[in-house]
Amino acid sequence: MSTILSVEHLTKRYESGHEALTDVNLQINEGEILALLGPNGAGKTTLISIICGIVNATEGRVMVAGHDNVTAFRKTRSLIGLVPQELTLGSFDRVSDTVNFSRGLFGKGRDDAWVEQLLTDLSLWDKRDSEIMTLSGGMKRRVLIAKALAHKPRVLFLDEPTAGVDVELRKDMWEIVSKLREDGVTIILTTHYIEEAEAIADRVGVISKGKLLLVEDKATLMQKLGKKQLIIELRSPATALPGQLNDYDLELSPGGDSITYTYDVRAERTGITRLLQELQQAGLELRDLQTRQSSLEEIFVNLVNDQ
Amino acid sequence: MNWHAVKVIYVNEMMRTFRTLAQSIASPVISTSLYFVVFGSAIGSRIESIDGVSYGAFLVPGLMMLSLLTQSISNASFGIYFPKFIGTIYEILSAPISHFEILLGYVGAAATKSLIIGTIILITASFFVDIRIAHPIWMVSFFVLTCVTFSLLGFIIGIWADNFEKLQLVPLLVITPLVFLGGSFYSIDMLPPAWQTISLFNPVLYLISGFRWSFFEVSDVSVGWSLLAVAVFLFACLAVVSWMFKTGYKMKS
Image 1: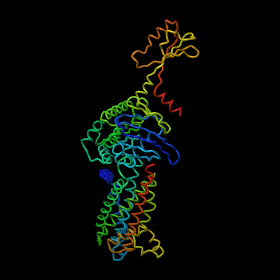
Image 2: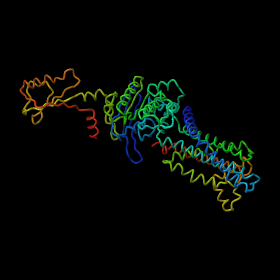
Image 3: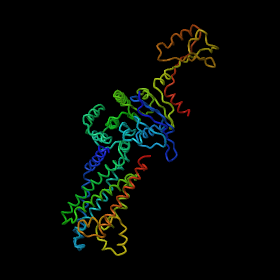
Image 4: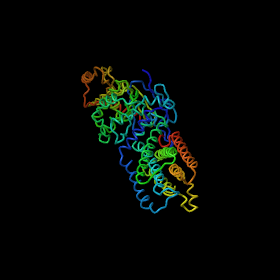
């Protein structure tokens, strides 16, 4: 897979001295979906804004399809579409006019067939002649997506596409994203919903206080997530684990009153039934059982707090 | 050049004008008519002609300038301030478009609108007074240059302003007094000598004087000075705009 976007040693320091981004490095492959996770004020929007040319970088550079986004801004910006976080739209514009406006800004002439297809795909065709102020919040977000796609970008940035959006619309948004991916569009989305990253991303980046803490394959992250623990509380404390249970990944608590079994939830056989049987055979009496899973959220919170 | 972008900005701005046709076109026409009724007919009938030009006709270039200056500034400043205010500026900043192209779209549309309004005022005025234009080419040149220059000034104000009060500040507190004191309603010969000298420091006087000369061949200052004044204004505005773009002043952090 070729790299379509490369961010090299990007730093942003505002005049106030606040450092919004610190030495961020990121390679994005063509056709992938990358989710940037991070709390509010982490620098997600600043990073996107620099790539799109809205904010100047203090240090470092951004290359899009091999072109520098400052010296060859026309080339790089033509390849990028941006859906901003806020619903920033002119209230009096009509839907199709504002989409045509975006297309023109990006140097493309009118293409009514394409705009029709775009608006149809986003369930906006019926609203094409409506003034934007008459649309619901969810519709406005679709209009923003239509505007961002009007010039057929190869890279699409979605800045918190589902912030303040109801569950149904969020699902719709995910469908839109997966359809775009089928069309070969590279997508970078920011979110603070972890399940969103889980649902649609190929890779997940975690950003906090201006630093990119990790970028990993979702599958790798899920492997960490796939581990689950079964905590078995014993009626009377055990001094040692019975020898016949050596095959299991078990850990006896210091007081000896509980045993923790770590297993892969996605394995064909978790071994739980057999373990419980063998515990009984070993004469251990159980008082209670509980399971726990370290979620992406926990990993994320730990990462962010560790800084 | 990204001509598509220039075109859509221009068309979008013009559409905004036509959407608010009543405010944009009707209000200058009504206010001009009122000026003619009050100054031209009611008061003007008691005023002798100035340098052989009837007072009503003498007013026309001054009134046109008054409208051109205020309209150019308010249109251009609002045009660029509004996307900043509602946040849609992100799209323009992230588009493959140069600063010059942004300027061309916004200032071009604001200047066009001023030209339309100026023409309407001229036509309206022709119903009240006899108008002759001695030097049509000069008249059109002053007309166009003034529209462009003050639309540029409006663009600067629109970028500089971070609230609606600031947007109104310059047109109300600077431009209106300068136009009123710049001989739009009188010849500076009518002023006491000391005030005549002070008036010469008012840049708007040169615009009005030159414009009036192109109509009636009467002027407070020579037409060469007027031309120079417009040129200085134009280049000063261009210099400020290019500095703003270079530094990203209030647009790009």
